[in-house]
Picture 1 (cartoon, rainbow, N blue to C red):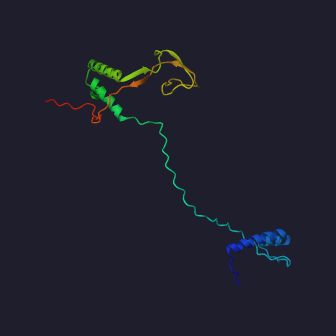
Picture 2: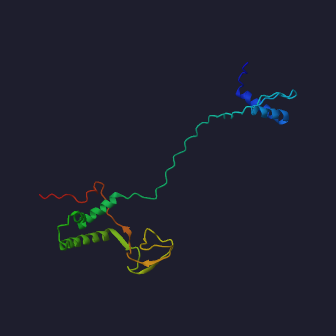
Length: 210
């Protein structure tokens, strides 16, 4: 006769009962061990006969539905440490250099067929116009006040954006070296304000002679 299947709750109750019965009866414990080893044994009359304990299946956790928490208000991302350069200011400066020094005309010209003297004369005009434009709209000072060729000591914690070490850079600061370039730093910018209708991308208007 086939034994009816025992429910999970029944198996759990049987496992607990068998556990305590085995703890209290050494002979029953020995018999259960023989059963687990594939042997047979006659259970003692005085002891309650318990079916061999089957490995209890892990209890299925009861999941209680939890209402979703209200969404937190979005947090504004922190400002990036890298700022995007404004193309308007760059275009404005390029336009000023073109107006005062014909800078774009000079750079875009194919000078391969010109003599060095002709190039030098044109470069002098471009140089004068560029210098006048920079001095009008920018206050520029050297990063290092010492003359080029001077011996200097660079201390620990120096500004790596203002001082670039070249040559055989070994060890830690302080560093002793010679200034090969003083560097440049802009202290003030005075660009003219742009009219909203002005297209800064037009560096120089086309000229039509009538």
